[in-house]
Image 1 (cartoon, rainbow, N blue to C red):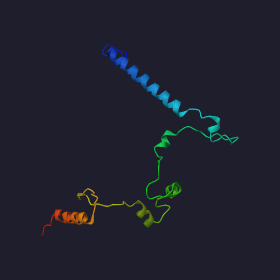
Image 2 (cartoon, helix red, strand yellow):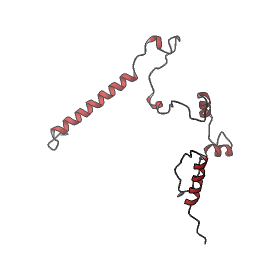
Image 3 (cartoon, one colour):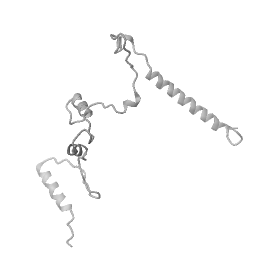
Image 4 (cartoon, rainbow, N blue to C red):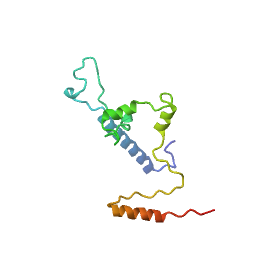
Length: 141
């Protein structure tokens, strides 16, 4: 049988505990997802033949953001940019190439120094001098 001679009793009991824990966790999630919303708070309260689902879509939740990225000034502007297709079928080849181009291009193996914030003009001048001194000279062939 499945729980034959080679299986110890504590191994059997641990698996049943894991199963009961998973089912309890699933029941809690289902309760949260299908929680009833009071009639006065429903979005479809004034619509006669319409039912709007109040349940949260967990699969779509990972694509939602709390605030728009810094280059956009409003939610509408960000959503408009998302609606614009980027593919080569809808844009010219130059526009498509520019839209998908990486922001920063660095050759493989190039060392990138960490960013430091200068506090004054004097400090900036010192940083420039240090950076120039730290660069190794190129060997002459």
